[in-house]
Length: 493
Image 1 (cartoon, rainbow, N blue to C red):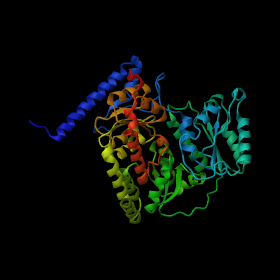
Image 2: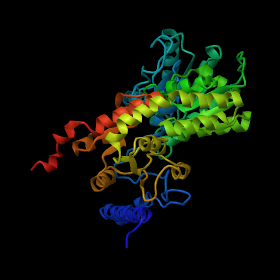
Image 3: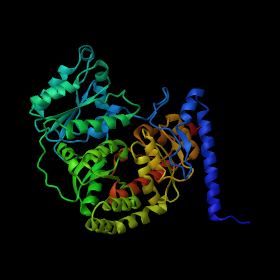
Image 4: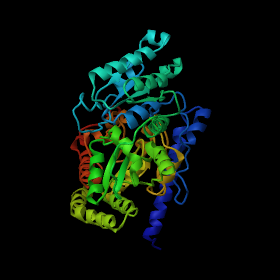
């Protein structure tokens, strides 16, 4: 008796689930009982029809394991505030935090560095032992004076607190208020993003969002700048212009007839932050890092917000139509016009690369939104994501992920270095997409890898043009002949 294709597919799915569950059990055996119990909550196998992925998240990392997470300072300075180009962001504390995060995210911008834009410069208070003992408030005041003298075209300053600031009790709020008054009302934002706060960089996003609310939107004595609005004004929220992503997104929005009045925060400016409450719609790319301020603007100013996904043609079409649904027929027609304009391009890209990538399996582990957002782009190329997880996701991230993954997908939250290596060894994906900390481990294992935090020095990956670059890069990684010439060191003897 022959079985149908559906029955065969169901049987394969059940076998995959059983294999993944057994793999999780095997990995957990190496831990002490208490640690295994904690880590078991973060590992799972997706069951279709369930409201979430069945894992716990946003919980403190178990001490002693090799986590890939960052800290609250990284979430504030490195993600939310750092790309604002015409403000100077002081890494307030010892030099190491600012040095390590210096220009690492490839947030592209337009301007003259050191004159009117400062993204790739590092400003640090360089705390020494005496500053820990006697406090750093006077040093911070002096730094702000020097900034005003040396960089007079800056439009504002943020103070990004490192761990010692919170531990010794420096009053950065008082210093910021004093200097703002001295400098004629200049926007100076104290950000309490000490690295020990919270369980990951995620709290840093939230703290940074709240500081924008308190010191930009609700700034004392602020006079509203002249602004002539239109019915088609939108703000791009949570796109950090990595490799030019926000520019690719902006092109499509403008081509469909919308006016982009702000970009948060890649290639963004203080004036754009200030203008955002005047938009008619906030289009939100990175939900995790910017949903807080989007909800605030909805509650305070009545501005609706909508998530969008510009990775791969299928999701781009879906997102353009979703955004257009908030406007009149002019914008709806514009969305269809944009989709039609680029269809030939995407058909050519798929025709070229899909035969080379069809059926290849991918495992992802990234931050923000990418563990779910890039899945559609891989599927447009005929590839399958067989495992995914978030560095610092929350439960609502995993709920959103259920719409993009398949039954039986391996799920791993805040995966440890050991777990990820064992999962890759067992599942044997054709490609791993993760961060710089994992890149060289897997390449030495002989596994093709793409750095999916900052696109491995490539990009943009957003938009239709970005999809062509994405497809080329995945093909270049997987089908590179170097993999036939290399073996992991432990396989050479």
